[in-house]
Length: 288
Ligand code: NAY
Image (tube, rainbow, N blue to C red; front, side):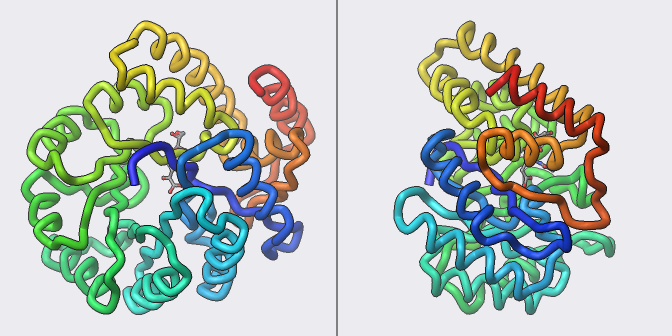
């Protein structure tokens, strides 16, 4: 399960319905052009928190059907509705996904016992292994070393997608849990995380920048830091332009320039203005 995973986008039409062909094209682009090792399905980048249970299931099915066994698949099933999360965990297990992942429960201020119970409940009925999805900036949920350790006591919890700029905690986790899988979650910090020996990374910008990300990761693993730093620099030039223009919208438009029908974002996210559409196309021209 090591390596680089694209946090997969989903293609939606103007009404917000899933565009199946577009989604299949995004999957193929990631496998055939970006050449990533796996896909992280229905994460933040997949606009997971804006869609219905039925739509989530439909996306899981389409992606598995398109991928077959070509790359590894991780399914993000986390939900504030723990019954939905458990149902989706069962659903993707039946589809043959390689692992599940679940965002820490958010919005209400759950205490750690509640967070632990959430993960154990999701895992009760399935044998599939789970990667914790930790993203404090969006969820407001930060866990410390001991709390990660307590979650890791459940043998079905095999790792964490660490989307935080806390390299002290990342180093402590790596040191304390050499056998757990740690994935870096911020693409702009991939080199720094790779130097700390993470097992892989999961990123939204890999949809369009997968090749450079892979180079950063593999160069860092073989100690070629100067070369990796050069590629991280170009990557970060790209990421700052994307972030300034609108993250998911810009990546979608960049994919469109490559003949991939990535479509629109779902409301309440807003679409790019004409000016920003042109900017997205110029970013694609510059970096793809
Ligand atoms: C997800 O579930 O899609 C992710 O968390 C992927 C990680 C990304 N985080 C978000 C919130 O989109 O790739 C990062 C991020 O977009 C990138 O580093 C730019 O900041």
